[in-house]
Length: 379
Ligand code: A3P
Ligand code: MG
Ligand code: MG
Image (cartoon, rainbow, N blue to C red; front, side):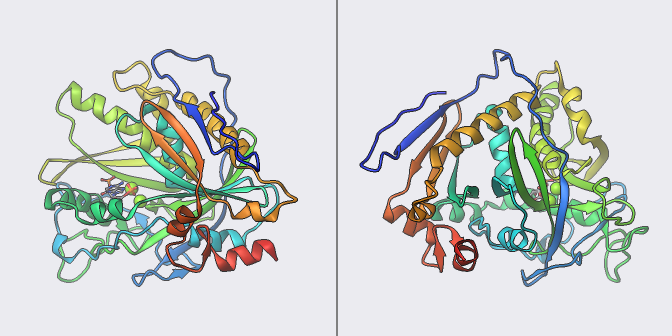
């Protein structure tokens, strides 16, 4: 852990860095305690992207028809526009289910990026971080250029992305025991894809000594909903494995599947293998907890303990860098930018006024926190 401190008048470090963990030399790490998540509440997004406090978007798993076509319905895809990954709906949920002692609030996708960083060789990422009344709030920072890039997917990428959603439709039904039979559609089709619609779960967990509230989408559940976690299912698609190189590539991908599912307490991941042109070949079920053992000693191996150890060090570092003085309320308004660069590590810097304005995006916010939430906090 290296810390470069450039002090200003208020003696706040302007930039701190945390070095990248080595994955080649097995470090001596003591197991990092992580708590089994407990569910706080669930909510749904309607087709018009309205947040409703119910399970209307929840789906049940059903076996997909053999050889299902993942390009089916492509031209009817209602695509959710790319947006800044705002934390607003999670804050609304958090506001309903507040409890003392929570050190961090964030979407699951952000935590997955943090925890899998030790094995990330390609993609860098940026976060915005605020510390309000001692709780850390994290949101992904996407520049306008990055959002535009995501929205302007080339036709091939767009189709491949669609395959993932079409798989969800072939594998889910609004009724627990039978596939949908929708007039005018192929048998087993769960309905045209509308990516506005999502079912979200908000959970509480603890990594090291940080209690956190995390929200994320759950693809579907098995059997009847009984309020317990053990029925959640994550759906994934992947190119059918042809040789050992494909296998290693797939094992590497399992790291992201693992943490994405693990963080929300999703015990089962169902992978639909497909041909390059989107025909389903086989499906395979993985138990989330068994994935680390499955990849151990293989070419694409990864070690979740190394990720958890890194995650704990990252959070300790972040807390010590951004913590505010309880006697100086103005400090709660500070916004920090975390930048992760593969092979290098993580740096944290305090945003200047212009940077904060950019984060606010001309909306009614203090930093990236909506005004209503800010007032609730300062109340
Ligand atoms: P697959 O991952 O099965 O291809 P999730 O698996 O997280 O539930 O996401 C469902 C689908 O959304 C994915 O299906 C993929 O098509 C698309 N998707 C998710 N994250 C993405 C990303 N970062 N970039 C592009 N597409 C993404
Ligand atoms: Mg999903
Ligand atoms: Mg999925």
